[in-house]
Length: 244
Image 1 (cartoon, rainbow, N blue to C red):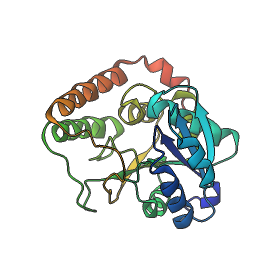
Image 2: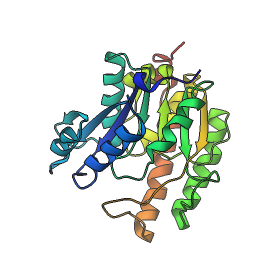
Image 3: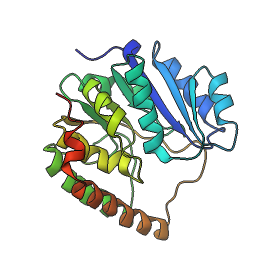
Image 4: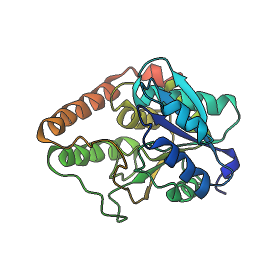
């Protein structure tokens, strides 16, 4: 049986997202009645926290920018402390459609982590060049590590069940891309089951996407550095947090 919305916490990392965060919070509350929304203001220099609060979200503020991984770790800790069974990550820029959350929750009936996959037949989201090659190779490697066929291992639209919440409250990586690549390695080593659900991804409502040859090349290098770090990190560090 899928978890209920009342026991689900939407965690929304937000860094300088004052232009979109209120709209995204309002959409989540409209499409997912009864769900709780925690916006983690990741050291923003603008009015992100104030606008999220005005929109009805719970708000936690980090004193400086820690990245998505640091913001999500705080979200997992809040969920564990306050009795939520499930954590769903939704970005504050409007790309993730909250209407896809029920399908992710359904997938948690027989898995611990459900990834909203952008390249599985839903919508027209596409990437090109080095970024596309990196995503494909990461998917091949991480599919082998997790024992599950995955084709969008860098998606930030994910639902995490009770075992994943307990694990990630203590061991969620904060390094660049650690919140996607290394988190899946940690989950696999802790014997958590990973699945994916086709979702439709929308264009950003604000900000500028980072699609140019130089940034794509940097992404490629960083993605594989994150993977290498994840694979060679001492297994004991994960074993200590294995959830049974």
